[in-house]
Every structure is written in structure tokens, then in C-alpha cells.
Amino acid sequence: MLSPERLALPDYEYLAQRHVLTYMEDAVCQLLENKEDISQYGVARFFTEYFNSVCQGTHILFREFSFIQATPHNRASFLRAFWKCFRTVGKNGDLLTMREYHCLLQLLCPDFPLELTQKAARIVLMDDAMDCLMSFSDFLFAFQIQFYYSEFLESVAAIYQDLLAGKNPNTVIVPTSSSGQHRQRPPLGEASVLEGVEASLFSQCLENLCDRHKYSCPPPALVKEVLSNVQRLTFYGFLVALSKHHGINQALGALPDKGDLMHDPAMDEELERL
Amino acid sequence: MAAVEKRRPAVAPAASFADSSRPAASRAAATAESEEDFLRQVGVTEMLRAALLKVLEARPEEPIAFLAHYFENMGLRSPANGGAGEPPGQLLLQQQRLGRALWHLRLAHHSQRTAFNNNVSVAYECLSASGRKKKPGLDGRTYSELLKRICRDGEAPEEVVAPLLHKIQCRDHEAVPLDVFRAGMLTCFVLLEFVARASALYQLLEDPALAVADRRVGQAVLDTLEGALQASDGGAVPARYLEAGSRLGPDSLALAMDRALVARRPSSPMTREEFLEKAAALFIAKVKPVA
Image 1: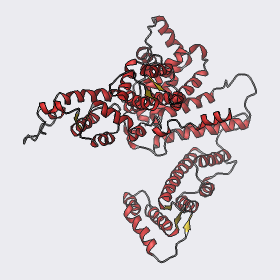
Image 2: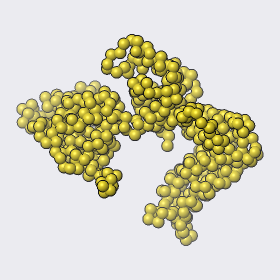
Image 3: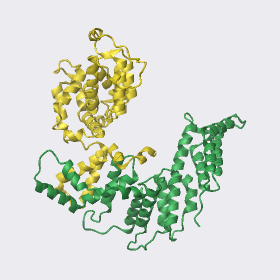
Image 4: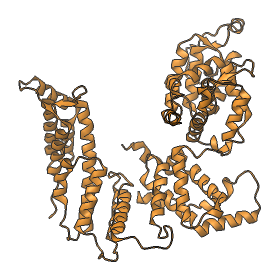
């Protein structure tokens, strides 16, 4: 059905929402790289194949990192491709190190940055010994959060650091409070004894963050849900909770539920035949 | 929508492609020149400009899928589909023309009136093009076939749309003028949407265990719908539409359904097909038959 808002947007905003120009420019670049093979009537066919592959999510295979992370759809497609290509790793129950997962990522994207894989591993290992082994599903879901929401997580980290240092980002905003009803912050000595930050305050800061920024955030209602279950939490505790949340995974739409990760009826059929 | 096209500043994709999306490896100026030449020679610049304008006109929900179909259709249109050989037969040409016309008609939703009318005109021209054995103009037979195709693709059951086709079809060898064609297309698409909504409505009334609706309730809804449609008769007077709208509002509808259940008539099932047929009949009754 038609959504009226879509029709009322100015041209540039409508195109930007779905990154239409990004894909058109990339299509031309790809065309130029392959121009020896294309005849005049092949151009339309080339573009057909290009845009079809974008729809199917195969367009990100073996592309450079800057392209893979360029749009939310690209990121989701990459996650999905990684899962499909390497789920047999999980099926066999193999545990791999961070470096080994990074090698797998580089098979699909030659210039994938190590830093990102490291950050993902830190979520699984809770910033602990970085050469520990990780299961496929643990790594995959942590990687999803780290990769899809990179920018969001950076801002969250900054907010977390501020809260740890006792700075409350919220007090600067409202100009009208004449009665001066500020939240009572615990004296600094007390705060440093307890681990992490207060969940409700953290939740409020994140709500403001999601409102202010246009880049992808997890659904604010679900973030609130995650934070409402505890009194205090650490940064990595928060990220782990995000990565294990079914609702957030479903909202993202790239990967199936954890239980269905190894479910591959087509492959099973093939194996039966052998 | 046409005004939007005129207001847009001339897009110069060739220049922006060379500047903004150049890959990391540095290229000599000469190579960049030859790339621009290549793009212009092969017609990429024009192609993409036309595609972009079409996207902005239609504003589809999924612009990337739209672009994929757009270029696919363009590929089909090119004469060199593989090189030398017999030109395609009359039947194949006819099918291709129908396919293309259908594609044009689906580009914009019927409520986007300007865009829809533009597309109708293009579809009409496409079908009216003269072939080897064909005189220019749209004949009744092709027109009927197109109507049937649209209804079939729109997943409306045949019995439901048959009365409409009966009303607006033209005789096989009759020439179909553009305004008749346009009215027919609009009616068809609106009916399909109407049937889709009626189907959704039926889903609400349906008892999930039995997969049928209670006849009393179904009939109450249909009667309310009929009453609303009658209220909107007598020209485009805003007050009449308000009245029709209020009759279809949740309160009136709920009351009607309530009354039906309370009345002492025995209950019996009403299938989806029956509901849709009756609902469509209400709509089709309003359609003026072709002279």
C-alpha cells in the first residue's frame, strides 16, 4: 500500500532514504571496470544484473570495505552472506579464535579492517583474553551488533565514559527548570566503588541519542527493554545484552533466530543424496 | 508530478561520477577523459538520467527493485536480442507489446493521477503502434486481452471481475479511443484495489477455525457499504462524501454488525468468494457501460 509520506518528501530526501544515488554511482563504476566486455545493448543488461544483485544481497561479495559499509542494506547483506557461507563452521561445533574469524571475513572482503573484528570479539569475550576461542553463533551475533551499529556504539561508548567520570550529559539541555529539580547524583566516592553505570540514567541518555541522530540505532523501545531489567550495567554487559536480544535481531532482519542458525534444509537435502 | 520534472536542475551525472566515486587508485586525467567519452558514447548518461526521472515520478516503495525491472524491460526492447535470425512472429510481438504496456501501467499508483495518466498514454501508444499485419490504433480485442491480464495478475477471482469486463469491453474489431482506454484502465485498477480491501475486510470477519464468515455479519457489512456508495451518488458534493464516510466509520459499521447478530435470523456461513462477488458487484453497478 502507498505510504503518503514517501510521496511528499522532496526529491533528494526520497532518493537518500534508499541510497538510490549510491547504487547508481556504484553501478557506473562497476560498468567502467568491466567496460571491455560490454557492448551497447549489454549496458541495459548489465544494469539489470547489477540492480537485481543489489536486491538479492549478493552485490557485496568480494567488494571493498568502504562499499560494504556504505548503506544499511549493504551491511545487512554482508552479514547474511557471512552467515550463509560459513554456517558449516557452526554446524561442526568448531570454536575459532578472533584471527581465524577475521580470515573468514577477509575471504568475503579482502580489506576488512582487523579493528572491527577485534571489537566484535571483545563483546563475546567481555574485553578479556583476546585469543580465546569463540563459537560461531556467539561471534556472529556480536559481530552483527558491532558492524551494523558501528556509529551508534561509538557514541554509546562516549556516553558511557562520561557517565563513569561522573558527568551527566543530560543536565545541559533543558533551559526552563526554575525550581532546579536535578537528579541526585551519588557523591563521587560512592560511584567509583560500584561497577558500571546506573541503568535508568544510561537509558535516558541513549533515548536522547537515538532521537538526535539519523544513523541506524536499534529500536529505542527494545533498548529501553534491555536496560529496564537491571540496576547497573557495564559497557560490554550492555553490548552482550544487545547481541543476544531476539527482538533486535529480528528488527535488523539479516540473520535468523539463534535456534535456526544451522537450519539449512536445501543443504541437508543435497547431503542426503550423496 | 510533471511540474517536479521541470523544476529539477539538469543532472550532470558524468561529471559527478568522475569526481566523487573514483576508486582509491589514482587515474591519469587521460583515462578519466576516455571514461567520460565511453559513458557518453554508450548512452549511459542519458539512460541513467531517464531512469532517475522515472523513479522520481513513480516514487516506488522499493526503488532498487524498480530500477532492476526498468533496465530489464529496456533490455527486452533492444532489437539486437542475440543477432541475426528470423524476426519474432506476430504473436510474440503482440505478447511483448502487452507486456510492455502492462509494465508502463504499473509504474505509478492510480491515485497519482498525473503520473498514471502519463503512463496510460505511453501504454496506449505502445499498443497502437502499427506492425507488419497490424493497422495503427488499438483494437477491441487487444484491449480486452489487456483487461483480462490486469485482472489475472491482480489476483482477482474471475467471477468477481467478469461483470466489469462485460460492461467495459469493446467489440473485437472496434477501435478503442484513448479516453475510453484511460477510463477502462483506471476502473480496472481501482476495482482491483477495492477487491483487495474487501478481501482484507473479509479476513477480519472470518472465523479462523471455520474459514468462513457469519452470513448475517457479512451481509450487514455489504449493506452498509451499499448504503455508503448510494450516499455518495449525485455528483461530487463534499457533504455527500462526508456522509458516506461516516456510514463506513467504525461506529456505524459496528452498530450494523451488532444489530445483525442480535436479530433473530439463523446464522449460516458466507464464503470469501461470495463476499467478494457481492462487494465487487456494488462497485461495478456504479460503472458506466461503454456506449
